[in-house]
Image (tube, rainbow, N blue to C red; front, side, top):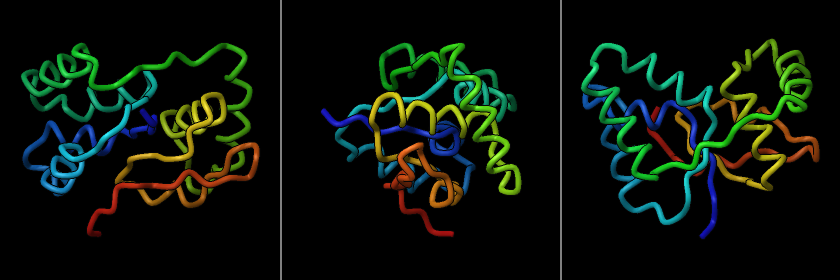
Length: 139
């Protein structure tokens, strides 16, 4: 099974029926055939954005608990790379969650991301490769 990184936006949209990307994200994830990988900072961002509803937060956390997404730790030695990425893309700007996904892409050899953001066409791995966003949403 091919692993794909997932950013906060699609997970927020999945658990917020009022989100403008809810239908597109739900439809995409229902047909997606692969493993989802993310980081703890991404999960924290999702929970923060779902703070309007404890029920939505709990639904999201239970979804994670059921193994819908593999949660990767960021290693202490990778903080230096996160700093480098944050400095390099400070004009975008790159947040902690995005930086951790690039770090995971580098470590795990993942080349695709599921995101509603368009920043991923700018970010590059150490090998100068772009993460291909496989979620096409109407903007």
